[in-house]
Every structure is written in structure tokens, then in C-alpha cells.
Length: 426
Image (cartoon, rainbow, N blue to C red):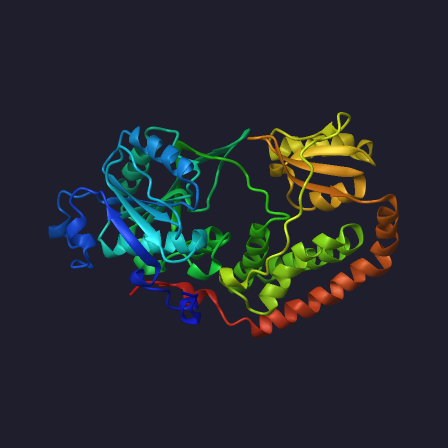
């Protein structure tokens, strides 16, 4: 089975995506059989009105941990719809009111949210809570507070809690962090945009819902960690989908900025780390070729990285993003031609380029298990060549190429935001 072009506009049907379902919910099996597509009130009396949509992919321990948090919630009148990958096994245990759905193909996070939303609307749930698998409801009252706020409102709203990540706490206005909405909102605005596959769908649907009032509640969920985008497959989708998101919603100034930065970074890396220039060029090429869906990703050979770090390496990992920025600023040229250790939360923005220019070598470590995720190094000659080429070649060429790419994209990109209003709604 492959992705279909018509899914760009209309979205797939449940039967096109779902391979197998195991229903452990109380009282909803009759609806799950497909006889009740609308879920009218007479059918829903005595049944849970809240559906929590929980994607998972080859990570059942995280799913089980998430379910254990849900068992501790003070509000329990909800069902959990777990969307698994095509080769995942259903989790087993003392869990109530769970619908397990195995997919026919890898849908990514965008497709998994889409399928869970599609099933929830078909079965007549009144409220949907959308969450990443590793975004845990650490506050026992979070669902209670979400629902009380929703039900007390006379207007359509989006209710969101605080998000906690290592060393940080903030309001994350992206919906898939225990964002709670009414089913009627989805029916009016549409479902998660399936074509994004992986990364960016949360920004797109949040942007689409921008006209709906957002209400913050004083409850906490914990997102496991900030992901590392650079040098991974996810980077391709994150950067390409960001460009698509900006052009779809006609944010041309932001689109131009991101396009310039991607091309600028691609040219920079041609000098300091040629093998990784494609990290930044591929998303641009993917956009220009109007590539969407998972099977448009051009895979590359994985590089083995050393798992031992030098004893004299400078460790600048740990802490929040602000703490990391302060460390970089305070050390600055002390990092020159030294071995440096940082964690994956620090590999954002222009930090990779800075590391190649300053450090002799650098190691990106996963603090959870101590594993080295990425290793980079550049020679003194490469650093000097970069400085010589930056002003006369790299910056002017970046401006010219990005201008061409921007004009071409705006003139030819066929998808506009208005097409996503009502996406996936039959």
C-alpha cells in the first residue's frame, strides 16, 4: 500500500489506514462496529464523552508509562485511542477503556493524529484531547481541569496546560500537548493534515485554529525531552514542513527568512562539513519538487559515531535553553579548537555551524543513557576557508539562490490554507 495524491486535499478513510482494532472500551463496541457514524445522544448516554488520542511507534514502554499516569487521573470518564505502527504489538495490562488500532503503513505523527481524530468523530465523542506519546499527564487533575474549563465555556475554545521539559516550564500553544477541544471544533476546522507525516502537523493545525480562543489552565504535563532535529531523518520533515506551513498560510516574510537560512546553512556546510550540507539542502529541494508524505524522504547512510569522549573535553550540556545560551556566551573563544560535549537539546538554530567553526571536535550526547548521538569535527584549514568565502561568496550566493527559490515557490506551490479547512471531514 502506498500514499495517494488525493489525500492531499480530501484525506483518507479509516478503512484505508486501519489494519486491525482491538476494543477494550466499555459500551462503545456497538459504535465501533460502524453502524453508528454520527453517535447521536441516545447512543452515547452512559458512555464516555472524552477521547484521548495517543500515537505510538515501536515504543510500547513509553505507551505503558503514559497509561499508568492516566490511571491516576481524578477524572476517569475518558477513552484512550492508541494508534500503533504497522509492526507494533498492542500493549497489554490492567488498562480500562482503550481502543487499540494498528495501521496498515507507517503514518507518522500527522497520520496517527488524523486517524485517531477521524475515529473519534465517527464514534460520536464530544471532546478530543490530543497528545504525544511521551507527553505525560503528571498532574492528577489535568484532565479534570481541562474538562471543567471546556464545559464551563459558552463558546468554542482550546484548553491547554503548562508543559514541563527538563529544567523548563512554559505554556506550549501547540495542540498535541494535551490540548482539549470540542468535536464540533474539529468538524468545522478539519483534522490534522495527513501529508505532513512527521513533524510540523502540530504547528499547522494550531495555525489553522488561530481564530479560536485559547485558555490556559494551571495544570502540568511533562514532555520527555526536546528532540534533536539536526543530522536526523526528522530534520528533513521538520525543515521542509516548516517551509510548507509558512507558504500555505502566506507568511511570506517568515518563509523568506527560513528559506534564506536553509540555503545559507547548506552553503556553509559545503565548506566546514560537506557530508552534512544535504541536511539543509534536501528540505528546500523537497519543497521545490512539492514532495510530501514519508516515501519522499531520500535516505542516507548512517555514520558510526565514537562512544568515548576525551577526558579534557569541555562539557556545556545540561540546563535549559537559556542556560545553554549563557554557557556559549561566557565561554565563546575558549571553545576554539577544543573537544566539546553538548546534549541534543542544545543542537538548534546555528549552534551546529558554530560548533564546526569553533571546536576541534564536538559530541552530542543523550543524557538519558549517555549514548553519543552525533560526532562532528572540522580542520583549521576548513575554518579559515569559511572565513575567506563568507562575505565574497557564501552570503551573496545565498541571497541569489534564496530569492529564486522564494519566487518559484510562491508562484508554483499548489496548496493554500483554505483547502485545509474541513480537511478529512466527510
